[in-house]
Every structure is written in C-alpha cells, then in structure tokens.
Length: 187
Image (tube, rainbow, N blue to C red; front, side):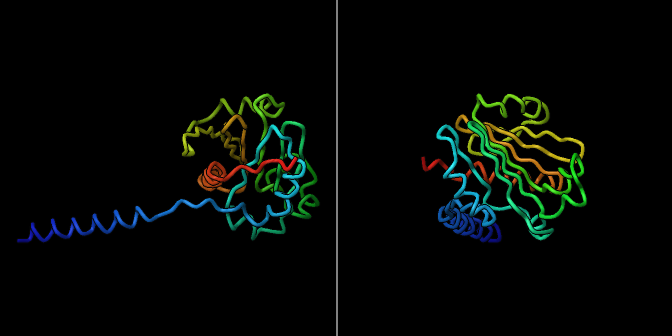
C-alpha cells in the first residue's frame, strides 16, 4: 500500500514537473541599462565585419560601488569597452592600480584577423577551457588579481575581464553575452 502511494506520488510529481519545464521559455534580455547610450554609439560606428554582444546583467556591487561611465573605443576591426568609475583616476593615476581599482569590468570584441585577436593569443591559449553553453568553448585565464574569459563565436573574438568580481560572476556575464542577440552596424 505504501509502495503504491509512493509510486502514485512520484508519477504525479513527474507529470507536474514535466508540465512546468515544458512551459519555461528562454528569453533573451536586453543589455544592461548602463549600456543604452553605448549601444546607440556602437550601432552608428560599428564596422560591418564585426558584431558585439553585451551582457544582460552585471553584478550589483559594480553599480553600487560608484558612478560608472562606459569608455568605448572603436577601431576598424575591434572594439574596447571599459566600465570605469568616474573620478577614480585621482586616487590611481595609472598603471596596474588604475586597471584593478578603476575599471571593474572590461570587454573586447574583434575579428579573427584583428590586431586584438593576435595580441590576445596568450589569454586564448593559456588557462582552462570550459563551456559557455550553446556549443561555445571559452578559455579562463587567471592573472595576478584579475580574470579573463575569452571565446570565439560566429567568427568574432570576445573577451571580458575583471579584477573586482568573482570568477563565477564573470562566467555568468560571459554566458549571458553568448546568449544575447548580436548588435550589428546600422551602416
């Protein structure tokens, strides 16, 4: 009697869980609000041979730590986007201290033939490989006080790095980027 009740309960649980899981939808979120203006700038200036994917979320501790200003540099075959704390450069006027303390999160995007891609070989080939999902394999490089995650997706090189958030938080950012729709040029 107890076995038949357990079997019945297990069967009901399975049916309910199956129904719930089948109704879950994967939704692609828009990039974080802090990127609103940057996305407009990227679309206007982005080279046709390049796409960008921005994360749908970033850790609250980055946003709460101070006023953030995106710093965007667009080249003919690569893009650098750094989030920087406004005014931080007064306390850290350059070098390693500036990078670790004033730039909580950085992103790089480039074509496979770009100077950026060639210069990033060390980060791309050193470290530990892992899956970001959707068939994308990334590489994690741990430096002295910072982490870099890089990968190639649809013939575009992507990298994100930080010295202020955990590796798991950085992996979450990279995973959200992999699943975002690419931002393309308006040209």
